[in-house]
Amino acid sequence: MSALPPTDLPPSDRPENAAAEPRRPLIGLSREELAAEIAGLGEPAFRARQLWHWIYHQGARSFDAMTTLSKAFRAKLAERYTLDRPAAARDLASIDGTRKWLLRFADGQEAECVHIPEEERGTLCVSSQVGCTLSCRFCHTGTQRLVRNIEAGEIVGQFMTAKDALGEWPTPTYDRAITNVVMMGMGEPLYNFDNVAKALRIVMDGEGLSLSRRRITLSTAGVVPMIKRCGEELGVNLAVSLHAVSDHIRDVIVPLNKKYPLEELLAACREYPGVNNARRITFEYVMLKGVNDTPADARELARLLRDIPAKVNLIPFNAWPGAPYECSDAATIEAFTEIVAAARLTATVRTPRGRDIMAACGQLKSDSVKLRKSERLAASLAS
Ligand code: SAH
Image (cartoon, rainbow, N blue to C red):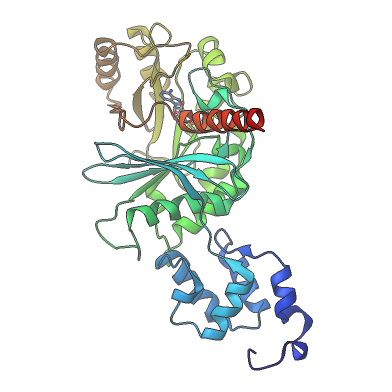
């Protein structure tokens, strides 16, 4: 192709036309979509598989690095597509090893992504929306309005950027820095299900990022009508942000409860496809002083979960400036844990991580928005 003068090329292949079309991202295309693109370029099907391997197993950041592809094919790809990931607008490292990135997408919107290394595993916490519609009262992201859903490519992109930063290419079989993914960042994943599902299918693909569905957990505030689909179509672990044992308290702290009250939520959990004693649902419960933390609450929690394969994750409230709540004190959390554990429910208390680099989820983004607003104000005053 490069030997021909441009005028002899079909119009779509003429360099001036190729340059006029914006290059499109490949990250985030499903296998089928990628295959269709490659077929559209007149290349054989196995090329799409090679490309997939370069993108998601090798983590290639340029087409030039894809040495098993012909130079002409690499050039064709580079003319039309990008391998861009979200940029790390901020990159914070804690003394305990936790890393937190504020990621900036192509349109300038931002979301947070966190890597939490532990002895036996490394968890990546991924965002699904810029902002959120749920307005949970204790959640900092809940104070931000929803800006938009995060695209499938941007969800996978969070994973890619984290792997770039952690130097985890090609994806190792053992000793991975990222062994688990939790959809527990900003946003409600079940309100952006199509993008989340598409992204997780890419993450689970055995010839790429290759993370088992058993190592992926999706956390929801309780979007009841979507819970079954999540289990059937993705088969990932489910976490539910319960946080209260009565509707009148949950209505206040997780307002989505007014739409899908406790009874409906727990019924959906009982029927979650694939749930059993070996694969339990995690119930998250944020400890809010004087709100949901009495021994009676703990007993009621155990009662509500008695017929659900469940484990309880007690989360010390991570306070943020202006938050309307405080965290329960240590003795209260301990007493609560003991009651739940005595009911033969697995109860763990989440250890706060990375406290030196971050406060609550969503705060980094808020700070960045404020900073950019004040920069714009300063610039307009100066001009
Ligand atoms: N929308 C989803 C996922 C995002 S939040 C959901 O609600 O599950 C991930 C978890 O962090 C949820 O359990 C949420 O309730 C909890 N969380 C949010 N802000 C918190 C804070 N300031 N302190 C402790 N936990 C918080």
